[in-house]
Length: 235
Image (cartoon, rainbow, N blue to C red; front, side):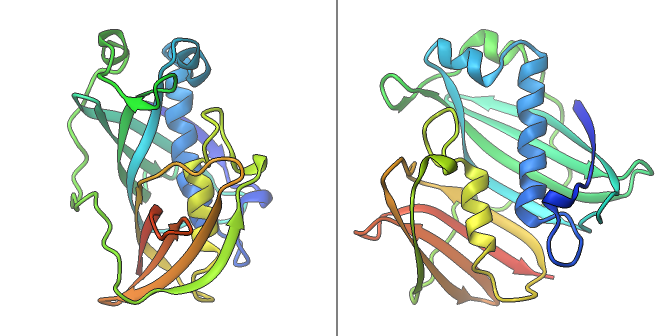
């Protein structure tokens, strides 16, 4: 297990003074990236070998979002490697061990020179010993799409949305999705699926819908091919 401690800063709170939904996911992503740095397999080092880890799915359960100034610790560990995929859990808790949020995530190993997934290198697996999976409900990593969707916005991808893989970073999709949630919508669970990497100059069409009491935010291209699908369960 890898851990790092942090404190809720003003730049990451929402209008209610709580750590934002997307900022919670970003804190988990940061923990994963710090883990890679500290075992000598940083994202930048991987790129020198034409390798990268890309996330394909998140499932985050929120128990309580911490308030401005509150300390928290994020833990992460992989629990499975198979073929091109790696699965990783996250746990966010207070110094007193109160659980704030936990998550499952699925990643795939990628060759940027070919634009295709590739089998995980053995030395990459060896850098991350697996541990038992967290006790949570493991849902399908496929997010459904409601039949009726409403176009609410378009976003032109600019360089501010890109990460070192030159794609829109997964945290940016989630931030933009949260921006179109109904006012005062309190999120209990988030599931996200990443289908197609949006790049500089692409236009993303943001559509929303409701199904079975859950709110969906779907990003597509002009032909309605999905970049990103997200499902928000209300508290």
